[in-house]
Structure formats: C-alpha cells, structure tokens
Length: 172
Length: 172
Image (cartoon, rainbow over all chains, first blue to last red; front, side, top):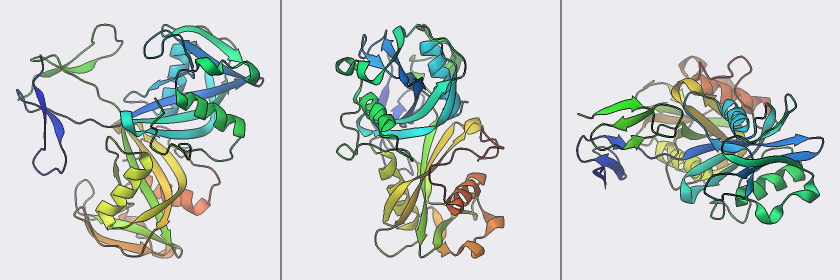
C-alpha cells in the first residue's frame, strides 16, 4: 500500500521515512510510556494483560502517553483504562530508556484516590498483591521487575536504568 | 502535496492523521526533549540560539531525543552538537510536560567531562555564566527559567512542572 522509503531530507544529517507519493516526512521519535506503582496498604496493583505482547502476563498499569496530556495525566488515564482505578500520584519513581525499541518509560509512585478496581478492556484481571505474593515468574516485562525493585528499595530520588543494562536491552 | 486527514482508525477511540492515498497512519506522539544544566565551578553553561524559534536568546543545551539512543545519550549528544561540550551527567534534575505542544522535557544535572566549549552550528555563542550574570531578560523559554530555579533550589529529588503551571502553558 504505502510508498515510504528511507532518505535523508535536505539540511538534515540522518535518514527519515519519506512518502514517495506526497513527500510527507514521518519523523520517528522515541515514544513515552507512562505508568504507576500503585500501593494500597502495602499491596501493589498489577494488571493481567488481555492483549499482545505478553497476553496473560502481569504488568503495571501503564501505556503510551497521548498528545495533549501531561505525563501525570497520562499515568492516571492508563490506570483508569486498564484497572478502573482513580489514582493520586506521589512523584516519579523511575525513568527507563529502552533504546532498542525507542521507548522512554516514566513511572510514578501512586496510591488510590478512591477505592475500587476492575479489569478494563485491555486487562483479563486486576489485583492488589502483597510483595511475597507477586507472580514473579509471570511478569510481562523486565522493566516491571525494575520498577518493583526500585519501589522496594525506597530510593529517595528517581532511578534510571539498572547499572547492568544502561541501554534497556532487556527492557521490553 | 500530501493528502492526510483526521479520521478514527477501526478499533481505536481517537482521531489519527491518515494518508488518503496509501492509508499510512501517522501516529502523533509527544516528543521528548533532553537537556542539561551544566555546572562548572559554580557557573552555568548557556547557548545563544542561532535558529528559530527565539533566535538570539539564551537556552540550556537541549534538543529532541532521537530513536536508538537513551535519554542520557541524547542529553550528551545535544551538548556536543550545540556547545562542543563533553558532559558527565549527575542524575535527573526535572521533568516538565508542555502539554500544549506535546513535549516532555527531561533535564539532567551535569558537569564537564573534559574542558572546552565552542558554538556548534545551532548556537551563536556559548558561555558559562555566574548566577548573578545570567541574562534573565534574554532567556529563550520559560522552562529554562524553571530548570535554573530547580537547580538553584538544590532539590534532592527531581522537580515536575511548577505548581502554578501543571500543564506547561507557559513552557515553550
């Protein structure tokens, strides 16, 4: 269908995706994922994914930030869409770069603004887990492990990528 | 030239920019700006912009993150391109959402990894300023003010948008 190819636009120093029909330059930028570690009475909210990738595995409420919202608004929207959860955010927990897939994850600490969770259309199940009950072998992505560990470490400032994975090779 | 219009793709809940010729969906996502407050012997590195917007005004070394790099790599690359400065980063200073223009700014603390600065092609001039010599009336963007104030406040954790501008209305 489409007629896009990679060329270097005049005055630029790297290749971009350009439509051969109309000349549209589709700039490909890193995408922002916003999410939260939501804690209520020491237990952590996880969502079991109803969609690929990693359908059936557990993840934090998180997703792609949209145009026109702030990172905080995006994190709250995702928790609402995936877990019908109304959040209050308590500051940034971590920022992760997953360079291989062009993703930057901004993860907040959060607690419930009001009680009540339910699976949204992208979740099979949503639940609060005590730390020792977290289904560690069925976590969807390495960065969920990173964020849970960063939360458990109680770092006073935000965390970046783990020291042994500065480019987010294992982060998808 | 191009034949793009706004329609809602099947299975989605909001309008996207779609090419009427080839069906290409140009997802428009927030863009990430990475930059640094670079401090050397108490003085702060600023760049005088050689390009629009705000040509002739002073800004932090910062720019759009590219695909395939981490936020840290992007911040170092921008300082190299704009000020021929080799940085070592000292952690995240602040994250700002400028919702109106779909921008998220991730600002690092940094110092020089080796001596030497020079104006790159996008800068008319680059200089270290003592705090009292900063050209406050000729700063390019409000978020540069925010970041300089966040640095001066010495916050132990990162800062978000200022309390009186949570959506980044004044942030361009």
